[in-house]
Amino acid sequence: MFFAYIKERKAWLLFFLCVQVWMNIILTLDIAFLNVSIIYINVINILAFLIFFIWRYREETAYVKALEENLDNEISLDRLRAAFPEGKSNFEKKITTVIDELILVANEEMNQIKVEHLEENDHTLSWIHEVKTPLTSMQLMIGALNESEMRKKLEVEWLRIYLLLDQQLHLTRLPSLEQDYIIESISIQKVLHSEIKELQAWCMQNGIGFELVLSEEEVLTDQKWLSFILRQILSNAVKYSDEDSEINIYTRKDNSDHTLLYIQDNGNGITQADLPRIFEKSFTGKTGRGTTASTGMGLYLAKNAAEKLGIEIAVDSNINIGSIFSLKFPLKNEMTKIAGR
Image (cartoon, rainbow, N blue to C red; front, top):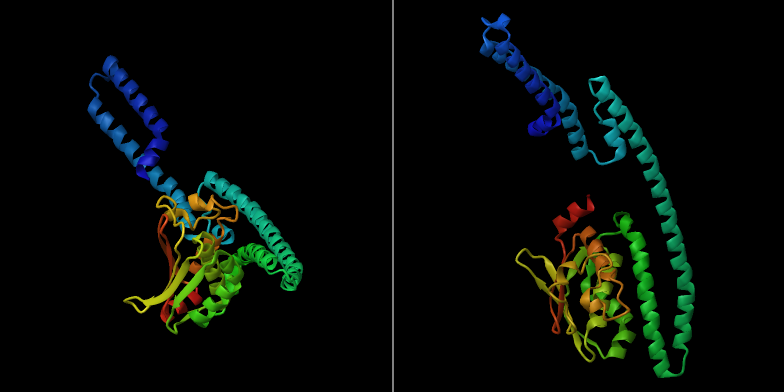
């Protein structure tokens, strides 16, 4: 702060230096000051200027420090405005008034944006529910088809539309997840069986099977959002697995007694360059660019939903070998802290 203040007030320093140089020239050349001590006068002037400079530094930086503390500690615009320093000088008070007005304008605009966002979310949710009606009708019509081969193809395409619609639904609901979950003891096996059943048509088309080695593990989480997270990982595993291969799913316990769920596919794998970015929004990577079905949203949504539920998602992958996704579920005491946030 001090060096920044010196840089800001360099004009003062240059002015004082010029005055001192000019004074010393006069004292040296003018015989009227022959008996005057030049060193004494210089020391007095420099000391007076240093006292003045330090005094102004303390007065002027107090306002800046108060601003920095408010910016560091306050989050909402209302709280920031209430805690904003008034300032001592008229100039500081003028700055406070201007910033106060800017905060009011920003707050109004922010509230307007929130209202528009909520309205947009409502429209999106309404649209999704409207689309679900013809989608359900399509499912019934597909089931009534006699031609087995055509029915299987249509079931797969229907499933892809359903998964995309499901992604959009949960993308819209994700910001309000904290108000939309119920923490309870959930059977991992039961949720997995339900999600695998939903992907059955797609798996049968590609000849993909599942090998489950699960203990009767129960975890504390929200069933609806856990189903969504598993749906994204399983659909990715099916999408990028080789034909006539198996997806292995198993559970373990770590040293801290956390339940770990592993989902291992035998497919294309993820390059080491893409691996750190697979949870980024809209990132498809080298593997994803090979298919038009990839949106880059599934893992992004799964990661964000998992973080809100205290679930840690990790991945290990090798190109042309496959990927292993792991889910680490929180313990009861950890879940209590998460639910209380």
